[in-house]
Length: 116
Image 1 (cartoon, rainbow, N blue to C red):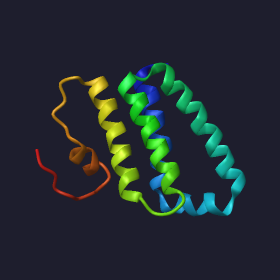
Image 2 (cartoon, rainbow, N blue to C red; image 1 turned 90 degrees about the vertical axis):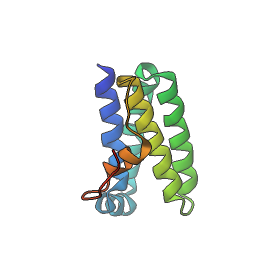
Image 3 (cartoon, rainbow, N blue to C red; image 1 turned 120 degrees about the horizontal axis):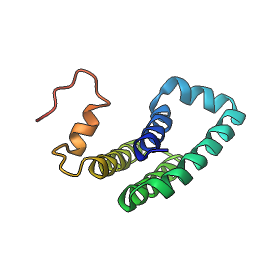
Image 4 (spheres, rainbow, N blue to C red; image 1 turned 90 degrees about the horizontal axis):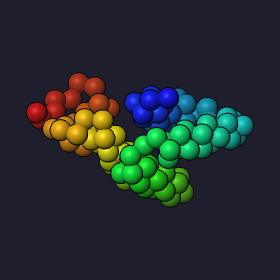
C-alpha cells in the first residue's frame, strides 16, 4: 500500500465526521459507532507504520483533541488539528508546497475565495 493511499484513507474516514447526516446516523446506532471506531484503529495503525513522523504526531494530536471535544464543543480546535494533519501530509508528499492551512480550509468551503 502506498503512502498516498493511506493518507487518502485517513482523510476519507475523518471527512465522515464532518457530515451532519452521518453524525446523526452514528448517534442513533451505537453499533455503527463501534464499527467506525474499529475502522479508525486499523487506519491509524497503517498510518503509524507508513506516515512520516510529523504526520503521525499530527494525527495523534488530532485524535486527542477530537476525543476531548466529544464532551462538549471545541469544533474549531478539532478542525484546526485536522487541517494541521492535512498540511503535514501535503508537506510529506510535496516538500516544496506553498499551500497553507487556510488553503486546506478552502477545500471544505465551497465557493469561498481563498488567497493565492
